[in-house]
Length: 25
Image 1: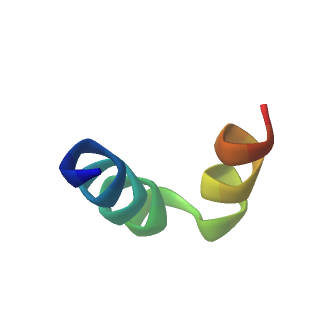
Image 2 (image 1 turned 60 degrees about the horizontal axis):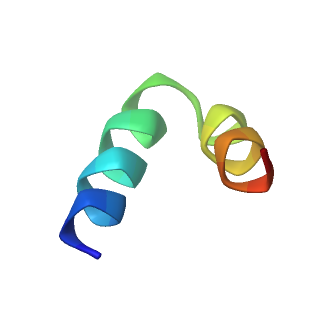
């Protein structure tokens, strides 16, 4: 779960839409 939080934080810095796409895919 820690990896998910770090991944989401990094993705948010780049683009929130990218985070959603990565989760769905």
